[in-house]
Amino acid sequence: MKKDLFAGEANEEYFQIKPHHFLDYLYDLGVDYRHDDEINVFGSNNGELCRAFIDGKMTKIRFTPFVDDICRPCKKLAEGVRCIDVFDDDTTLYYGFRYKNDFNYQLDMKLNSALPDVFCFDKVWDMIDLLSELEKRLTAEIIDLYKWRRPERVEKTFSGIEKGKKIYSLQTKKAV
Ligand code: SF4
Image 1 (cartoon, rainbow, N blue to C red):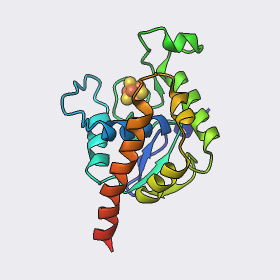
Image 2: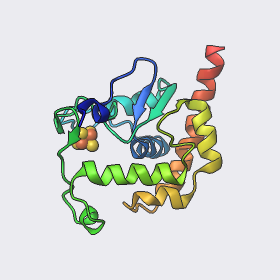
Image 3: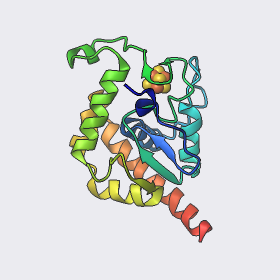
């Protein structure tokens, strides 16, 4: 099995993000959470890239079910391929998974399957186009595929899309 099939390569022209990580960022934007107070024990890029998204710097993005730019420097990523972190509650065991790697993979595949042309793994999106498409196509049911049920998750995700559209419309105008 080739290691780089799963590890992927960083790309200078676009960010590579797992679909469920991107839904997290929309929620974060919806609640104005920039991860400034996050203790980054394992050295992932989660907070840094969340701030890049919120600050309008994530202008191009491609989804991946494998290693993304958040996970790439994380100490929990064994041999640059597989996350060896485990969830410490019973939620994932209920669905048949303990390792984040496995739970997140099945979640990203569910998101891909729910909106294949949006969470497509072979397309590079301009952020403003992606947000416009998600505004039209994302549903509460798809957001709830996530399963960690926070009552305000759906509303805040859509609020994140709305805020993101304003941020990236300004970016697009600046670039013209
Ligand atoms: S999913 Fe695993 S590898 Fe990725 S940031 Fe989280 S702990 Fe690190």
